[in-house]
Length: 532
Image 1 (tube, one colour):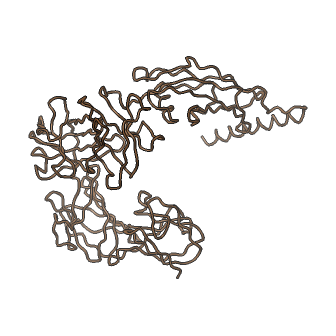
Image 2 (tube, one colour; image 1 turned 60 degrees about the horizontal axis):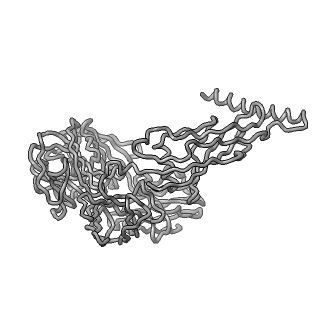
Image 3 (cartoon, rainbow, N blue to C red; image 1 turned 45 degrees about the vertical axis):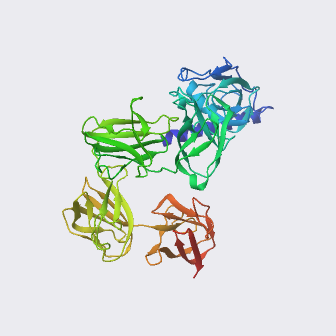
């Protein structure tokens, strides 16, 4: 493949050189625009996209070739502009003379440049031709069409609904939450996730130019909340319900402990995979009975506030899904599964907390995917001993820890064995695989990283943890450049910006060449850098 690419590049180079050589033998340069590209009319030029025609072909965008002389390699870039707001997007680059889309694909493009559902807009198609990526020229003309977009998220809603338009008038209907009036009594409601304190407006789903109400979220009102709009436009919301679970004698926790569900921000569904007996359960928020849902006899798999218990048809493992964002009509689904699951977490009882496996002070390693793979990160003082504890079973070390040369990472076998002994106090990432029955300890924590450091932006220097002050520190020699702080060698959690008010994903921190003592207080988002 490398050889072919080299030949291609040589071929292009020779073609250009040949044209230039010819230009030296004649009075006219060969590599020049002789005839600009011409866009063809789009037909039909007025398109309404709907659920029923979303898989059909959108009218092709075609053009006549540009002429740069014999042998010229020509590519084209096509740009679509919404004339109402002048938002533009390059929708394709090709060496052909045609772009093709389905109506559904074009619908996504239209929404990305500010076309709202049910509204008709004028769009302009423009074209640039490029010869050898050296010369760039506009087409002789533009093409135009009218189009009406639709919202595929409301395909199954046949009752009145409305959009929660955050950032209005610059809002995105493809990501907006919906509230609705499935009962037809003029009261709209639905669950909405507000990530920030922000104003919003409520827009009629059938006519997004019509404002039904206006509201504002405060810091205290952020989170996953049920928003309700009364007939007179008055707004109210529940307090934040950021955890949901299933509870009942069909679940492992009975009627006293919730089996927690996980929220998927893309599907906006709450899901859990768990074993259930052939008894009953309900859904509830925040491990509290104030907000709970049971069955609804009016709708298959429907839910109603405080409704009757839901009967599990047979003992089995299930994928249970809770849908609270379908414009006010709440539903659930139960799918039998043969997936074998691990417990959600194991505790690490040990000498540091009195060997109590269920105490609040005990460390935990968590299996987010319930796939028998667990992880967690904690500080262990030198001499600490512990074991893993999984639903009544104690799991220890079999043999010895196999440390690397730097004594920063050690692997070991687990089973019916001895206590795991920490010989060197440090913050450790603990992993365990109870299928393979292996585990590991690796020093981790906050690190200094950046182009000012020896490791650049690829490898950070781990800081030392002080359990007394709950701070991290290191002495480091740096070049003139930038640094940041990041956790566990990953950019998922990182701090930058003002040393007195560090922020997640904050800007790089500039530092002059020298040797410094750097101290990080991650709890309070502050740091000090002192020359030594």
